[in-house]
Image (tube, rainbow, N blue to C red; front, side):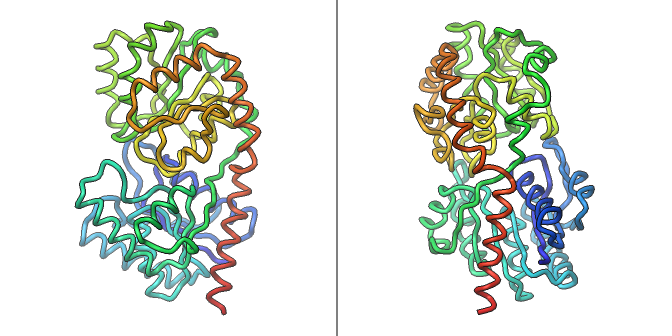
Length: 387
């Protein structure tokens, strides 16, 4: 079939990696004619656009499709997307993210093309001003009028949208965000070599956090617990993987605490390096204040590492307390310190929880599983349209 994907920008991020993997699988495995429509990519997050352009399917960049709200450019983007879709004549349009989700669904609806929309993370979420929060709910209700079916990356996303009155539950299907699990099961390089390159000793206990150094990603909570954690266990080192606008601020805070030797920043790294960095960690911490279902959680578990996460989004669907990790109240500090120290001091528990996570989730998060499930959703939508 002919499928057109629409996403706002192809930065290095979970939604974008999911979209790229879906396009690649549909093109290479399922033999679909795939087009990716995206806006320009810029910023410190890094870009997946070159990778997309080299994948073999068509990529169209719409200059006016930008992340921030801009009425004139948004109108131009809508017209450009509609013009592309009119030329492509896809069997189905699959939209991703908030801005592209609204504009892409509207354009497809105007042309009578069936639409599937993936919720990678709710557009209305913790940390927004009340007016913005309500505005996004209103926009999502508007967009739902043009949506044949929703794909959620976690059951939690479906719950949020149903509770907000956006669409009935039967209009949603959960498809977990898949990736290539093999490098996490069998890392390309030994952990000892990666640690040595990072300036870490073999007996260090490495607490890793993967994510952009941006607001709502929660790095500040690790900075808050670091003095107590390091005082109790001087072998602990924190590894921050990723880059962003808050890096200088965090490095200054760490220096003021006198803990520079206990933190390592990798800066921006390509997604292909995540498996080896993950395997160099002893435990994975995810303190984001807002997520759909962070891919770092199943990636950590498939790497055989226990995870500590705040109870946000779909985290509870993979973080099973006492079995695969620790699930903590959002923004909690004291429980975070206690969980890190407990796992840091208990290598047997780390091994048991990591082994259990690997057993539970390596099939569920394979990208082949994801693309097959998405294909089933497409068939259901097209069959309903035909009938």
